[in-house]
Amino acid sequence: MKRTMKKKAEKKVQEKDLSYYLNHRYKVEIVPFNDEDGGGYEARIPQLGREAFRGYGDTIEEALAHLDVVKRDLFEMYLRGGVQIPEPEKDEERYSGRILLRIPFYLHEELSKLAKEQDISLNQLLNHLIERGLASLKYENEVETMSQTMLQVFNEWRKPPYRINLQDVDFAPQPTVNENKNIYRKSLC
Image (cartoon, rainbow, N blue to C red):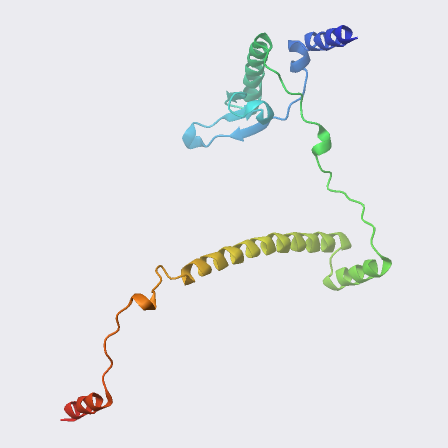
């Protein structure tokens, strides 16, 4: 049983040849260069290695064509060396921007009235409220972190850098009452 499973696994690895990986569609980033830097474009595949899988060209098409050559060369080298090549990321991770939200009817009514008062659509109002809510959560966490840090700094600052043991300190003798009168007479004259 173990031999047949091992053979199936080896067969799957053998089936994944160069054409298998070249036919995959990996996400490609296109980055334009400034004219001061010579212009042109860079095409890269971040999932496979932003620094390794890069192609350059004066146009986007040239950069993509160069990236295809680099991709072919690197895939061949990886397959010869037994380096594992990741499958493309699934499209499931993308977001459509659409959600279905069920809310109580009274809340729906209140939001609709508010949107009408603001002269905006209910969708715009909900987007605005959600953005504000997310921002307040983010800043609430940041403020909490800052206040904890400030409290720690304050507590450290309040601690005296040294401690005085009153038993170890010799006190200067305090002037007596008669000596105090003489001090005042001297100061008046």
